Length: 87
Image (cartoon, rainbow, N blue to C red; front, side, top):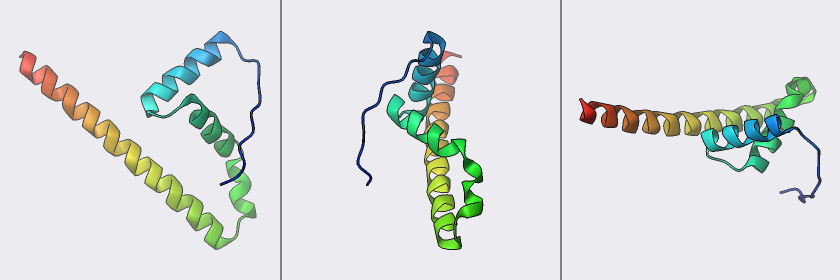
């Protein structure tokens, strides 16, 4: 893992609220949301990757997407059960 560095940036309150909402929805820290956003910013960097690097990236992103989908389905099923119980 690369060495982590601390930096400070000025952002609006709206950005902070948005970051907090994304963090809660994704179930990850705000720092992780920022890291993901930075990684996604230049998604055309894939043109410069060789095949094994690109496949590793695709694999990682696919695993993240599957995990997020599973979490969302679990939350949705819990919510649906609560709603059914109210009926």
